[in-house]
Image (cartoon, one colour):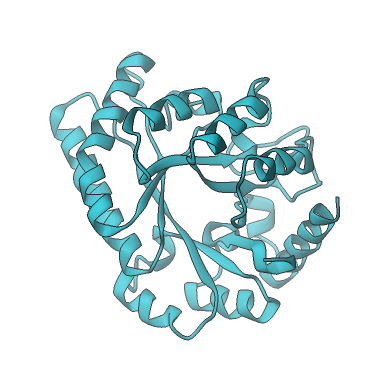
Length: 274
């Protein structure tokens, strides 16, 4: 793959567009892949979305997002497992080979306990994922989200978790926004690649000063993340899949989305020149 063929955009990036609108625009622009967030197809359902996708040559790269396994009660944890099985079924229905997992955390308990519950949750859904042919990508999140979003905060923790299962259906999603600060990132990316566990690669930038820790992500080249260097590490680790643009931004959601898409494509083209 080359050029925009390797570019994938998450539906959340162009949040104001309907699913059909963004497929039309991505196809017209030559974007190669799309990662589908559940909210983008909630109204139509996975089966109708799958039918719609048949009209486009765009490849479905992943489905987002499962996880959130920890809970203070057995009922909450059981509900999370049922939800993840549903997400796996929806991923299979739209042809997504990967379900991205934001693994979750429970602020009333320590992180080690939450990680043990994440392991138990993965154990519970892995047979369902294997049967459906959907891989589970553990996405480590920045430590600022360790309270409620994820107790998996470094590549080392994600690698440790994935390697417990020794399964082709459990791996890791690398997101530069969450991991660029990690002093062991290069070594852990290489470790992940050597194990065959590197399933997905997400890109955007960390603006400075950032105005919102969730919804102020930047276009590639707009911030301080050494994306080209990290991309090289990912490639050297054997990953040759899509580069997935995932941007949460109140600023960019409020602008004309065609203009925003043009900015995404321009910044991506600049990135792949380096």
